[in-house]
Structure formats: C-alpha cells, structure tokens
Length: 376
Picture 1: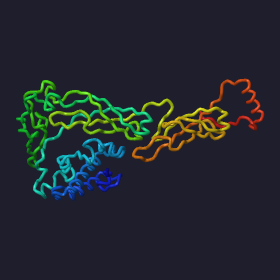
Picture 2 (picture 1 turned 90 degrees about the horizontal axis):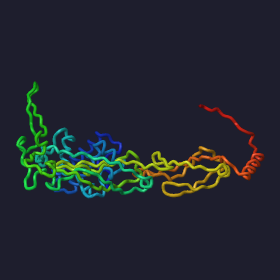
Picture 3 (picture 1 turned 90 degrees about the vertical axis):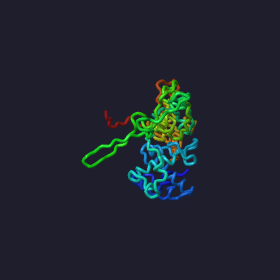
Picture 4 (picture 1 turned 60 degrees about the vertical axis):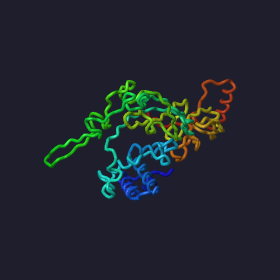
C-alpha cells in the first residue's frame, strides 16, 4: 500500500499549502472528465483524493503519522483503503470547492458533468464514541488484536433506519420541497445576497415522517451492544489513539455513522516503568555481588535475560540492556532496558559472617571515610 505523501509527491513535513497545491495539480491532471474511459487515470484521481482527505485534516494526518494506514482505517478491513476505496465520487467532488476557491473548474470546462447533478444537502454525522483500551507491555511489544464491547445507536430493526412506521415511508418535506435547504434573500447596500442553510423542519434530509415508527419513535435508531475488533500496532503509548471510521453511533434517515475513537492506555506493572520505548527496572543485589561482580538473571518485557554486573559497582549506577525495550511505532527501532542497581546492606549477620567481614576490614586498605559536600 503506497505512502500517502508519496501519492501526492510531497515530503512528510510538507505544509498545508504544499499539500493542497500538489492535490490540485493531480486532480486537474487525472480528472475523469478530462480522461474519459481511462480507468488508470480514474484510480490515480481517487488515490490522490483519498490522500488529500487525510493529509489535509490535522487530526487524521497526526494519526497517519503515528500509526500509518491502520490509524486512519486504511488497512485490511472490508471497504477500507485503496483496494476497497471508500470515498465516493460525490465525496471527492465535494472537496473541489475548497481546492478551487468555491467552484469546480470542470463545471465550466466540461459543461457541468457530475458536479451539477450532486445533491446539495448537507450530510449530518452521528456522534462519535470513545473507549479506553488498556494494554500490557507484552501486548505493546508484539502488537495484538483485542475486542471491545460497546453500546451504540444502530439502525432500528423495525423500520431499518427510516424512522417511519413499517408499511409507510417518509414523504417529501413540505417546507423545503425536498431539497433539504432553504434560501433567504437579503438586500444590503452592496446589493442582493442569498444565504443557503439546512431546512429547519427536516434538518437537511429533504424528508418528513408523518407516521413515526413505534419501536424507535421516529428516530430511526435503537440502542444496541456491539463487539468491535481492534488491531493494535506494536509500540503504542498511553495517550495514543486510533479512529475507526463509521464504527461509532449509527444514524437513521441518511445520517453518516460516527467514528469509534480508541484511546490506548498501559496497565500498571509491579516493577517495570516506561519512558518512550525504554523500559526501567531496579535490581537489588548484595554488597558481596557488588564487590565481586558476576551475572544475574533479570526479567524483561519478553522473558528472562542475563545481566553482567561489573565488579565494584555502586548503588545508583545504571546498566543498559540494548534492544530489550519496546518497539517504536512504524518500525523505527527498539528501545533498551535500563537497570538501576541498588546495593543492599544486610541488617543482621551470623557470627561466621561477622568474623569474615572483620577479617576483610583488617585486610582492607581503605583509609577510612571520605567526605563531600551535601546539599539539603
């Protein structure tokens, strides 16, 4: 699957204006009206539109930069990604107003075409849902697939989302005549102006319900439980999030489904802590081990590992196990495990141990205590 920045021909730190300029150029080059019957050109036109729709949105661009295609729903799921292109031509042409200054140049060049036939109704979107997903370090290390159970609005089982009583149908809105919009003409010093807004009666749908469904009371939705599969990439951190498009609340009467926003969190661990991709652990060793050195076995996020203790190590020193941390997102390397050594002095000794230590003290060449400045 191609990189979105590569599709538009821009760098990953491209500005918004550079992204818009690149898309405008590709849209003009591969527009279906300019290339009738050319399937390859149409596919490139769609890819460019998909890339622009994500990279022009700051939130979606941030998710793509963090998680790649999976973060914006371009993956293996049905209907997602360029293999199962999920932007309709109507969605694509709706972007042209922004790109070409409020009009579609192909309406003028090619006599209207598709754009003039589009519905001018404003599409409403159902509310998004948010869920927090806690992960263990093991799951973050390898990536995982989790299931979350949510409650959301779904299409009414009786009226199938229409909001009308079974056996009846919505009728054309009498207030707007089915257009979904109303126009208000006002006169000012500068001349006449027309303000277009959604119809206040049908909320832009163009339809009215005369006989509401008794099951959903005309809303078109019911509250139901749903189980959603979430593919968690390696290396996520607490606070990272992923948006699953269309998996939030569903809507009736042509309302666009909301999104499910999955916010990742980390399970508390009894002795590991984390900073970025590095794992931190404190190991307590005896003063004999500290003096003589050797090897000890310590836990890591992926099982046991051997750690070499240099002779004469002091409390507070930190040893590094390279590559024993967590992966970084998008395969940008692996962190390390940092082990802080804590030398433990015994509080009680057997007679034999005491004799040995007294003999060691007599043989020691230490001149006694030394002193340094202490800042309270």
